[in-house]
Amino acid sequence: MYPKIIQLWIALQKKIPKYLRVKIITVIFLSSLFEIVGLGAIFPILRILMDLSLANSYQMYIPYSSDSPNLFLLSLLVACFIFYVFKNFFLGYSTHQIFKSVFYLQNLFSNQVFEKLLNAKYSVQRGIDINKQSSLLVNDIPLVCIEWYLPAVFLISDTFLILLLLIFLGWVSPFLLIFIGVIGATLFGLIIYFSRVYSYKWGVERKFFDEIKLDYFINGLSHIKEIITYNKIPLYLNKFREANNFSARAAKLQSTAQVLPKLFVESIAILALLSIIFFMVISGHDMKHEIPVIGVYAVAAFRIIPTINRMMQSYQMLQYGLNSTEGLISEIPNEKAEVNGNNSDSALKNQGAALFSSLKIANLDFIHEGKSSFVLKGLSLSMLCGEKIAIVGQSGAGKSTLIDILLGLNLPTKGSIQFNNQSIFDHLNIWRAMIGYVPQDLHLTSTSIRENIIFGDVGKSVDQDLFAKVTHITGIRDFMGQDLDRSLGRQGLKISGGQKQRIAIARALYKRPQVLIFDEATSALDQRSEEEIMSNIQKYFGGISLISVTHKIYNNSLYDKIYQLKEGSLVELKA
Image 1: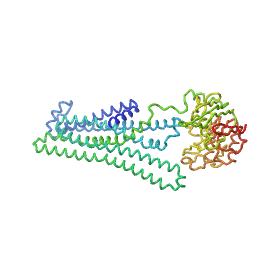
Image 2 (image 1 turned 60 degrees about the vertical axis):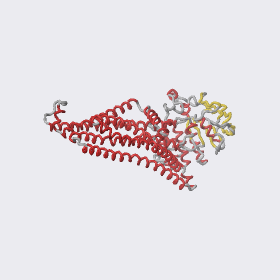
Image 3 (image 1 turned 30 degrees about the horizontal axis):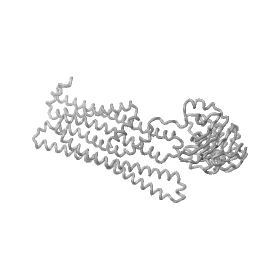
Image 4 (image 1 turned 180 degrees about the vertical axis):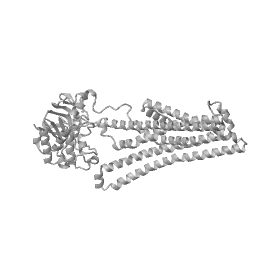
């Protein structure tokens, strides 16, 4: 268990900039040193309080001190107060630096996980468990940073402080240190053993049931229509409540276990201090000399007890969050993720200057990884600038696969796709800058229609004329009027499927594409609406090229060529 914790700690440390690591180590060292100095300042004050004549023995070490014992004692008290104020300010700064590193990690991990998922191969993205990744982002990353890394930092800091305190107390009274140390070590060992056995187990349970809970939560809201229709609301509620109860039980047990050591430690500390006082009294010790020693131990106890409590809680949290931390480390890329689509500077420099002239698909084959049958076989197609082409096919004919390859998301098993006599896969950014893609099921953000059409052009001035043109072409203003800043709700729940497709076409046109790729883009529209939109596109974007992949066509006159996708190949129906 310990080697695993150390390995994870080292892995997390590598993610933090060197300057921040050095700063944390420095403030931990100085904070512990200030604590010892503050505690050491109490000892002479207590001795002088018990015997004012001892002031003379200290005055010789302090220049410009008063000859009056009372004034000297007052000076010591004021100096001690000023030091403690400075020490506490520094401890506040130290805590700030520690939390700075914690939330640096949290931001870094969230960004890296999202970047890794966005830039993964498309074949990998299609198999991503969104619920699991959501749980990683919402639950595991905060837990690892706040409830694993932070306790680890506190454990290191508190261990260093305790060692310095024990050295100081051993110098004040070795006997008392041995007596209290034996009791404390025994208690601490028992709690460590308990933590190793149970805290890790509760952490695994919490993570497992949190993922189940999130799965039912997301699926319940995402597929509410089917759930209501099939009367499965009680099923989803019961499954969610069951997982929620088990997760809460694990968290409850862990939280209770964190509090119990504090109660034991305080009780043992009071018992030890009272036993020491009783032993000294019946042994005939001169309490005039022993009270300063007991006082120093009592003051130290006020610092040691909460520190030990926090050390034990930190160790329990390390065990509790160990499973989540292992899972997170395996998800974080060791190096910066490669950007999906060859976003090199050289490719981006000339993408705006390229003009589309032709597209040629030659002898295209495609087989899904791990499969043996061809989805596409020997597929060929040629298109010139301004041509409108329709590809018709039944479900399962390979239409979606062809679209994915045209978008550069999947590589063909064999064959080539070229625009302007150059491979799209060698110049993906230039190719994607030329095309506008309209999917059947549009991804909508829970913002306004306007923001969904301009699609995140942050920092750019919106082209109002172009925006007005695309909303007119697609008929968006006919059903929304002038209220284009109204929220669409989560995933566009406030609008119909046909309205979503109008927004999808407007978004693609707002990009000023040279080639439009329709993927069942008008399946939710009636024949009249489809013909109006296609006619408007021809009228206002006359030179645009179009590839429309669909399962049926209402009006053959809208297209220059029509192909049927059958058995992985194209059969020309209209030339």
